Amino acid sequence: MAALVLVGCSPDPAAPPPPASPSATPTPTADPTDPTLIRTTGTPVTSGAVTLTASVPGLAVTADPDGSARATVPSGVLIAAPEGLTIAALTDGTAVVRDGAGAFVAGLTTDPWGSALAQVGPEVVRLDAAADLWFTAVAVESAVWGEAEGGRSLAVTPSAWARARGLAAQEGLWAQVVALAPDADTPGMQAQLECHELGAPDKATWNLEPWRPEVDAIEMIRERCNP
Image 1 (cartoon, rainbow, N blue to C red):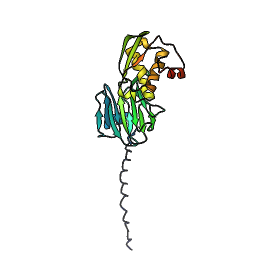
Image 2: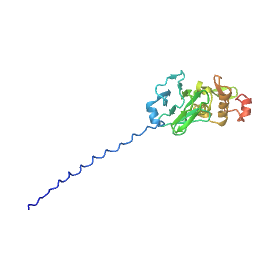
Image 3: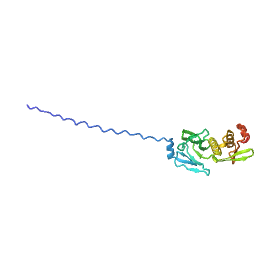
Image 4: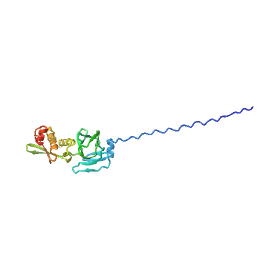
């Protein structure tokens, strides 16, 4: 009897699995507080050789005749110092730009007065309420030695920004007086300057005399800043 040989049909070999899709590389999210990003995309606010940058593009900036600059900004705006400098929010709502040695370079005030400026990083502050910014690199327009009754006298002409007072103005006034008139660098002269800033902001010039005695704050005010 003839044998039947059954040849089974072998199944096709299994198809290879599809190649795995390469995993997507996550796109990094830009840090909105990065000072480099702010300086690249924001609005420059310039006084003299110093430029701050507000994080909102397209702001209208007004230049005053004295070289200061003003801008109206919304709540939450970030403000970056120039590259290589720092900006510090002070306790009264003003701010100062300083160089690497910590010296005053420029100052910033807000209106309404005392609008909260919060420190974000060494180069960035944030304004937590809508406000008008007033920025300047000039606190002292001139400081000229002369002679007055009693001896030498330094006639200081403050800028309009400095006359508006504040901790930033106080720091800027003294730094620039000493830069213009190094002989004025005494505690008594500094006390006279601060007294004029607080008590005689509208006086055309503030006259400081190195020969006047050093007195306490109450006596300084009683003597109208010239004890």
